[in-house]
Image (cartoon, rainbow, N blue to C red; front, side, top):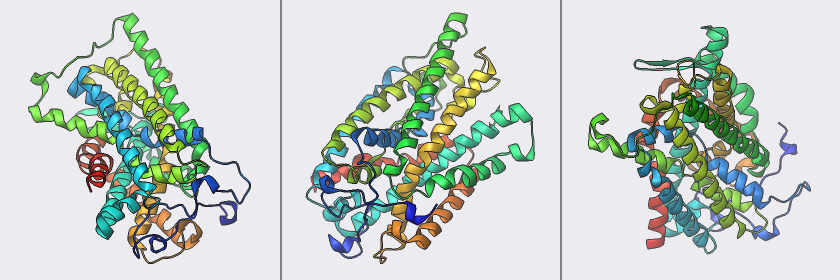
Length: 416
């Protein structure tokens, strides 16, 4: 991809508006309402912002929602609505203080807590986005090459079609996916340039829901459905504290705050961001509830941490395997299209941490941009190969960094 083909939103060093060297996710050099396209392209719309925000929200966390329902039961999962409401309030706080502060989450944290606050924010965003992207790659590997955790073994789509080959292994499949498919997408330097892939990714999530709904209806009529529990079954829990392992999963599912400012910066009218966030939260909450309920309805107590691995030949739903494979492939492709949007935030935050003294924007510094992109892709690939399951990553990582980003930091800013 040629640099001349891409325009970027100006990301000024923190010295222009704050303390020297203060890290910023993305700043707006002018009023958002006066933002103009040098290349003559159309202004970003509210619908584009809705697609990008929704894509930021609906990611890997959705695949663990059915497993969270397996632990909590259906009724306690009203936590989804509660966490969505908290996410909306925390984003409103951030946008309110952005008007009188910097144009980024890190800028707001820097004003409230100084340089240390901005650095802590950058670290949390980097770890959150990195963990999420690793989960994406693990799920893609599960779908294409299968999963084997403990005594539970599930075959992947490629293994079903071609059997056990060296090129159907997780190592080979993820390598090809990273280099051939993901790399061209992560080389995009503007958030708004991803609006079309974001729209397609949301469509694919809807396709997955429709297929899951169809399979669930089929199992109801054939009498093979697993009636879901309404409340937790404590006899199946090793400890009552196991209930709390599901909470980080739901919080992770609504952690998108690090992408709010980059998306807002490209809107013609920045006040439209609140509406875009509300629409996205309602849409994504509905998607979570539907996927969680139908996933738990289909697989019951056999629901895996990554529900996609349940859609293999051992699913027992009695539907054609092609339909199961279509469900898996649609969501794997959804994650492929979500990947570059989160990688955008990861790259900016790592750049701010490693190259604080650089005055040129990352998007205009091609060597730095290429180095960070390549290094992060290699690291993400290696960790996705080493880490076997997404549940452990979401359970422990989700209890620290996403909770801080979505709940603790916005509340601390208001109290400050």
